[in-house]
Image 1 (tube, helix red, strand yellow):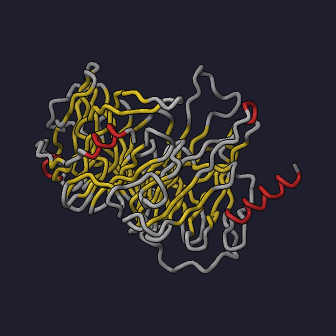
Image 2 (tube, one colour):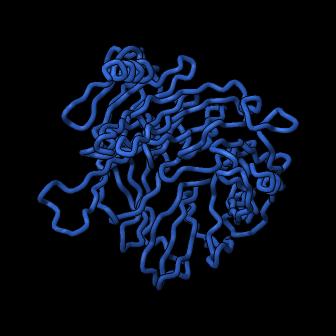
Image 3 (cartoon, helix red, strand yellow):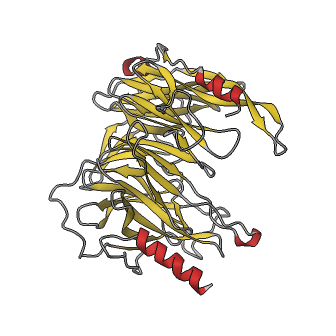
Length: 447
């Protein structure tokens, strides 16, 4: 046991090494990186979000196309598919004439058990493969978390494997600076089945390591990357009421936004905080746009200087939703537009708000699925188009049983299309469809 523990700690130290220093713990929930770090550049890099906070994405796009990971029906491996914008075809991301389920195929991923997310940023293609924490009571040793970096055509794969006991922070976003990725890793205590600390880290694929930059005690105050600012990262912190202060049967969380500088590795308060269900918000660079519950006024808060202003007293002015029960900002800012939902008598309507001139337009693009009308949502943005989910495809998949026999099962996969940005905002369904017949071929083959 001593030998196993020694090897595990040695693996952690080698992988999570930041220029030879480790982040030190402090009593105020967080700790800065060592002052002995390498000299930082005078100007911050241009940051962007590589993966939005929230659920695990199934598709990631750039200006040329979008990556999609197909789960094989025969095992826990996956195939990388590519929605090519120029030809509007769904193809294998492979240089093989007949792509195989092995390492000869650059788009093949041997294990996606736990979930895998594609990222398209830094001029590279990444795959974030979520691992599973060990469960000693049922003698489950878990599966490792892996981060892969490749060229856009899946060539020159480099892999970083996290030591057991470390997991990607669920629900947190990932940022990029043109070269590296910034993400949160949590250390998991298998005996209590709890995450104890979260380390803000930066990848270094050339050196084959992940550099820790800042450590958070997430048992006292949780942390998640939710955006990028002109100086670094935007973090959402959340905490439960102090013991004895909560009189409600359900604990209400308290939230605040902090900024992390990638230049001096400092964490600073912004003065923007709220209680659970108090408001909805959307980030656009250094600005937080928000609407308080029960109100229709749109406000903006500058995270750098702490100033607040009212953008419009009534975001519903000129719409047919004057009697709205609730107004909620939804999604991300795209093409200079906010999006919000209005609830009226248990029915929802959707609108966009142009930040530049205050134009409000109804969003009326929907598709039917399982008896419900679902909004056509933006999943990726290029210079000219939005990639949208505008339907679901029903596939007949061939699957294999444990005895080697095969059977047919029904599977539903998202349907994607391109649409010009002006058409989306004006609810004109001029979709540019993809030839995605490859999905039927894969489903029928059992892959």
